[in-house]
Length: 258
Image (cartoon, rainbow, N blue to C red; front, side, top):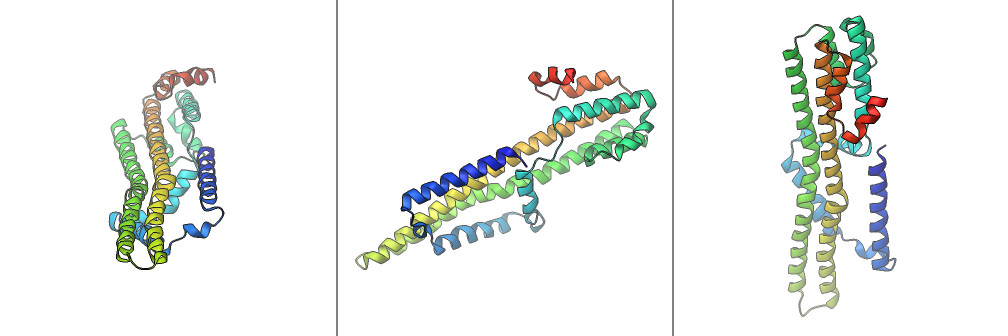
């Protein structure tokens, strides 16, 4: 579980709930509008279907899992593991890594090391792994796009509902004050729904996924350099120096000490 995502989500929920309670003096039913929900929630769902292919929409569960959980190896842990593998390959030969490959959970790293053990040439290894990175970037863009669509169209559809509510309100001028008040409430609440959905949910989740993507690309590039270094038979210290370039300077001393 990613602590930052969990803490941020809980704080956001509490803030919204407390403000709702204080603003309505406990009458939360005043914030309910079926017309606003139909326009904002239903309209946003329609926008998602119109904007994204179906095979990307069915991955929503994976997008949320990626937001809440960070199952990837930390950069320092990855460097240490690659350093140990490099030492073993230099001492016993790359074929000695075959047993270690089965214990590696990261599919990208496992694929690269299998190619090294199988004797593939460096250009083939690099080309294959870079295609893996490109495919991963495309998948990550889909996750970011999903939440960008919500962030973009949610407030806009809330504004559409607001304008419709205002038309109804103006049409009721001179009539019952209750009808005018109801239509005004529809207008305001619909905008509220769209704004909350965009700023309290879709925006932060999309930004976290973008950051996760950058971190994973960095980790993949570091693994790629380590794999090529092992394949070339470099000294493990050289492998360590190559991968340490991807780690912030303040953490490199800790890495070398470890």
